[in-house]
Image: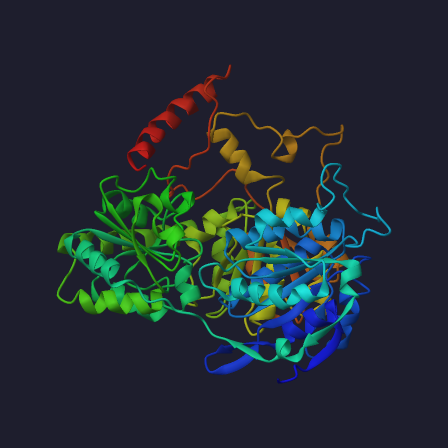
Length: 619
């Protein structure tokens, strides 16, 4: 009998050694699967994981952040920028340090992005029970604050014995690298078990090279999809984020060019086609272009590729022609059957060429092709007008977007997440670079922007990363500006100060509500009111170069200085809280009270019921 060779390690040391053995093949090169570990140490992880990470600090770098949620956002953005091919791990202490990461875990879960969470946990032995920061459940002694990760993790395990790693770690990697199940993995790490030793078999730490698994479509589903497309006269393609993760951009280009297919793009799908591609109609949905949304109301077939068809894409199911058929090409069957879709389950890079070769000789109706081209030209002119500097001392978001877009180079990246900016950016931002548009809009998490920009820059160090952020998100989570300085990863940050939560203020008014608790002037305040934050001074205090500007012309000059800077540069300017690009867009289902003493709410409810009737036809 062959003797199994073993190595004696603590549980924490075994985890870290296992992570360093995971590799990925990217374009023929073998690279580390884990590009680093973000860590804020505390009593739940400093002695165990901290010691293990110190031993490999030259091969697996440990990055120290200022906020646990922020560092996890950076890890998520890193993986998103690299199309899920590489990833990072995050560890924090047993109490609030770990629960601070839960919001970020939800971001990763909703966006199907891989990140490994290694939160410190309480003592498995319970000998010093209760310990500092321990959440005690009166009815269930097995519960700890780490259980909060369960609903926002694709895989969760609590390692209560060091030998449990033998089964848990392979399962964790399965989920992190699977194109269908991909998402956050949480391995709760009791602090005493981290330090326990075990004789691990050496084969657990053999180098493992991961490659993207590609699933070909079922032949019957493929045949049905071909028949459905051949029947269509007015088709519309919806390009989703799955096209990026599949690496199917050239296949998409061939598909839409060959058949003159108009294509709209989701927030995650933006960049799959260059903005000036003849088939790119612009964004779709609630923050969509007039061109694409008009086609969606008339199309007889929607070909949705790599999208989960969220409410912002579908206009809460009230925008798309209720008589249209829906074909969903998606690697995940869970997404492929949504909205009564006819499923074509498979990898886009494998499936699109099969569709293209099988549809030879088919074309949409000629008038449909002509109409799409006309709508596209009209929308290009609309964007030109919306992003032009009007010379105001209180510019609109659209004017600021135009200035930043003009300053960005061909391979530069814009990062954003929440508020009114995602709508303006999806409509108006132009990029030819497939990674030039980085939007976290699955969870629309305020506070993602600055940390997400840091992770993006770490993944694409040769690109300028422009972070566009409102004053509300900036005040929620800004500490990773200091981290960007510490690590030497330069960001260009543009802070649009509209004195409050302007996006929700506008939504509140649309729903019939008065200005209340959104703009700072409408909030409960002391006699002197809310302070006017000096964002430039604040950023300078964190180590950045910074300045305040008053108009778009000054912004353009400041952007030139920012591009020349060798470290993070913050530009702040006041903007109009009320103005948005009126062209484009569609209804969004935000429930309005059936009963209210306000006439404005009653009128809003009547409008709401009209759209609900349209929505019902698509259910």
